[in-house]
Structure formats: C-alpha cells, structure tokens
Amino acid sequence: MRSEDRSFAATTAGNKSISYRTYIPKDYSEEGIPFPLLFFMHGAGEIGTDLDLLERATLPRFIREGLELPFVTVCPQCQEMWDVRILEPLLDEVIERFNVDAARVYVTGSSMGGLGTWMLCNVASDRVAAIAPVCPSFIPVDPENFKRLPVWVFHGAMDSVVPIEETDRMVALLRNAGCEVKFTEYRDLDHNAWTPAYHDPELWQWLLSHRKA
Image (tube, rainbow, N blue to C red; front, side, top):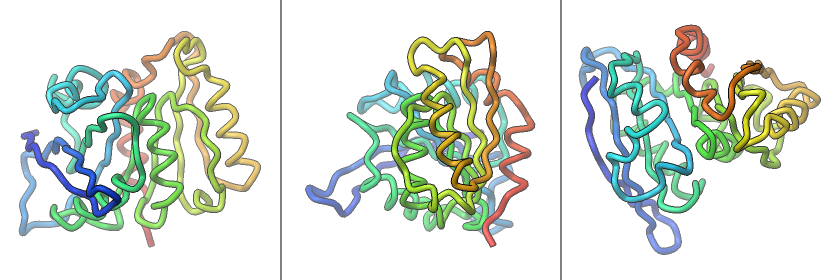
C-alpha cells in the first residue's frame, strides 16, 4: 500500500485543522470500482503534529510492516483529544475526496482511538456500515445511534491501562438496548489487544460483510 499525507481544516470555532495519513491499495483507481473506506483513530501515544508518529504503533505500523488491506485507509492525527466537531466533517471530506463506496465505510481505533470510535459513531452512525473499537474506554452514548450499526469490540482481560470493565459496561449498555455487538476477550493479554485483532483476517472479512442500505 502506498501512503499519502494531507491536512484538512474543519469549519468549527477557530477553523481547527487536522492532518491525516492515507494508505492506498495498489490496485486503487480514481475511475475504477469504488473501494471500501477504513477510518482509523490512534491511541494517546501518537498524539502530536508529526504524522510519522502514527507508524510507531498499531494499525499504521502493521501496514508499514507489510499488512495489506482492501480499504482506502485514513488515519487522522489529533493534537490533544479526539473531537467529533473535526472528525465528522473530516469523514465527509474523505468520502468525497477518494473513490470510495459510501455504503462501505468502517471505523476502528485502538485505546484512545477506540474511545474516538464510540464518540464519532455516536454522531455519524448514519454514514458508517460497521465498527471495531479495540481496548476502548467507556463513554456515555445514545444506544439508539448504534441499533443499526454492527459492532465488534476487542479487549485484553489483563489490560492495565484501560481495564476490561470499561468495555464490559459499554457492551452491556448497547446489548441491553437491543444493539448487535460482538465481543472478543483475549484472556492473557494486557493493553495490546490490537496486535491479534488487526492481524485477524476474520475482522476485515466481517467488516466487509456489512454495508449501509
């Protein structure tokens, strides 16, 4: 996959900007069949203004090391904390900018990026076909926004950074409201649930099995 770096200025108070790195499949074409879009959010260790930090860990690192994905993969970099006032218009921007299938948009993130996944899809679930948060913290959401959004969440049972109880609470909240939620618990793992999750071909196949009506 080849990479491209871009920046985007959201129309918010102060016109906040966000930079992002995009990984493009080798057979991507602007004129060909639209590709699915994967929107990935990093954890706290990659906060900053240097996009090279993204490849220090989790999914961007795995792509750099040779992981081939069948998506146009967009990886924004936040400078403090994820902000849906920037993320939501950025998602719309990349759907418009790239030759992607708007019915096959998927969101994932690790640790703080898993939290960002909950945050973004709480306001943008109408544009997303399925999501996969990895070792995320709990955040209050409106379960109604997730009732037509398939969820597969991953967490290590021995997580010393974000306790697995955070995901237990979120899964209970969504399931009790009738949402479709898969939950994979890695019994012997600490915080690095992203390593087995993002190397599992079943995850990518599961995402691709979903599309918006």
